[in-house]
Length: 134
Image 1 (cartoon, rainbow, N blue to C red):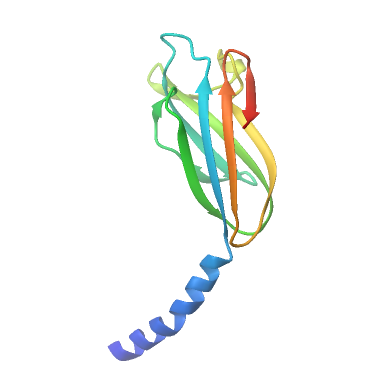
Image 2: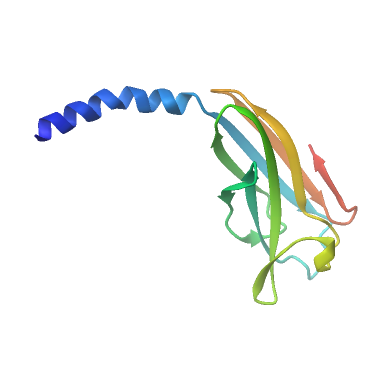
């Protein structure tokens, strides 16, 4: 019986690697600039693909540049990156409506091709209230 399971597993292994090769990769990095003294809070991001959460980053100080690397299926997708700040013992969206200087929400339509890497580098300039793709 164990030999049958092993044989089935070995036969399926090439199919699994083929499925993985069809995905594209997104390498997204981001940094905050223009942070006022005393406002370098803990921050994290959530990344959504067509409104579905696909990545939730670890918390770190806002002045630390961070990056993520995620697999995405081929196709055209709506991406949304949202920044969350730890303030007053809770996570809150980094938006003007919540009293921050920037709406730290970035959206873009991307096209992912199989076996290709897509690199995006973002700068959230708090002093200028701008998000720039570098």
